[in-house]
Amino acid sequence: MSATIAAPSANPTISDAEADAIFAQVLTAEPLFSKAEMWAIEKNFVASGLARRGGLATLSLSGAKLISEIETDRESALAFANLSKYIANYLEISSDINKLLETAQSRLIVALANRMDCEEIFAEALGGDDETS
Image (tube, rainbow, N blue to C red):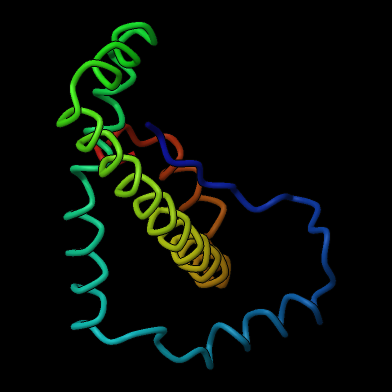
């Protein structure tokens, strides 16, 4: 999976006044949560990995195999029903995390765009080949 960083355009699509207003919003933005709350969110997200792994494992079964296991084994049917519930929770958590990360990315881009050398910074970041992207 790779991260996408959008480099600022040489032809901005917003006026300087609009850019200044956005920067002022970011400059005065309060933290969305404390470090303790951040770690609680992270812990909850990591704990939901079982749902992700279980869902992916389910996709490694053929449809016929999945249906057969559910039809012939009550314990399997209960396990898959629970997995379905866990996956629904995981999807909700993932959606919330995605919204938070979009906010983080927006704040980062605005803060970086304030640098005089922001185009060089973005170019260097885009050209980098680190393992976190």
